[in-house]
Length: 205
Image (cartoon, rainbow, N blue to C red):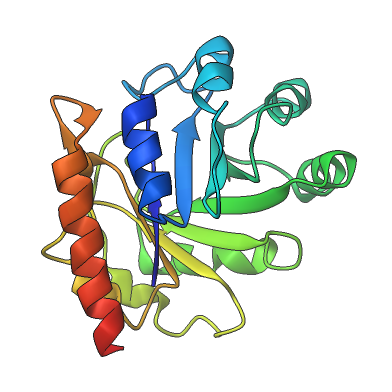
């Protein structure tokens, strides 16, 4: 099980994640409602760092094609897309930029899980998330247990050290944000504790 630390806003926490081999680091790029949102200028400065094996993920909500293409100029490996984006848009944008796509699905009811079928042929990773956007909201992670193994499964929504073990045999990647913060900023002590917990889980799998 890999980890994505999302909503990073400062260089010291980003460097800590890179130095500790966090698989993915996420950055909120066009959603000013979130306290984690970054301007293009701030994102460019933050991402100007040697990332080693860590993959950088830009998070966009209902982006226009212009907006999408603008942010692909940053030092990113993936775009994580929320909203009602049509297939043509994603396929076109992916071809133009060669960037990889994480398609985020917001889950309110069990039937929402099956929406991955609309994107599985061109999204590199499917993310099942809560409907909370910037708020951490729980949902029933067991709803994804029947998703085929050939789908790379990322899961988000109020994940923390106490419940991450329940995802050990469900998710390939856990996407964590709010539980790793103190006063709305990523907390290195909490990140370290979470990574240690995931390492313990991985040793048992």
